[in-house]
Length: 222
Image 1: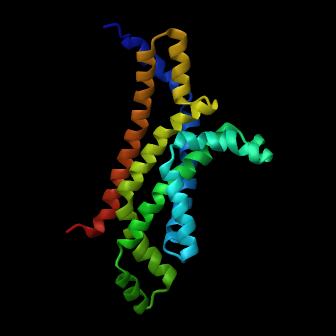
Image 2 (image 1 turned 120 degrees about the vertical axis):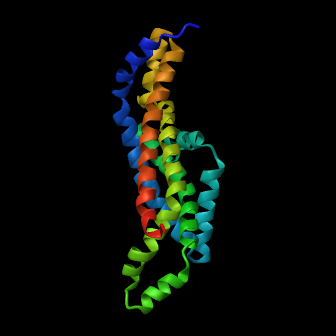
Image 3 (image 1 turned 180 degrees about the horizontal axis):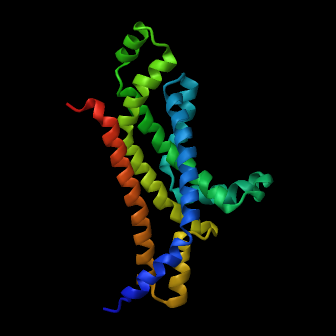
């Protein structure tokens, strides 16, 4: 077996130099996807026209590959709207990952909202709390507690999907590993180093997720 372990570990610091762009893409996409997913979840609970638009959106972005969506956004849309030719690949990746992930988060948030008994809000209003306060103090914590496990998994999936940015010419973790592999012809070592970096990032996010689950679950522990 010809595996250069020392080269692999020496390669990790070089690859880490491209971690900021991966974190930028992932962080921005998480924020946009969360806000859009919440909006879609509220639309699913709205009137018939709003529900129809939300369901069509969710059906499309859940039913087509994320790579195809990225290619449509970056290469296809500028054909129809020339003004989009000025949009850089990083912004296109953020838009594509956000639109895709929001479709899944919408269903997660909808299920979280439906999991809370409406009687709790009615009781809170009857006790004198205003609707915004009742939603913030009673509804929102329970929705978060119920939605965090699935939401955390979606965030981890989004971070891994950020590796698709290299298909649009963005130099991030996977692209850096590919360049090193091509230069040295040590493909196994280079891609293993990339995998370890992604593993480390998602492992840290998993730890944060478990800590948040524990914190939000304290009021419900016997």
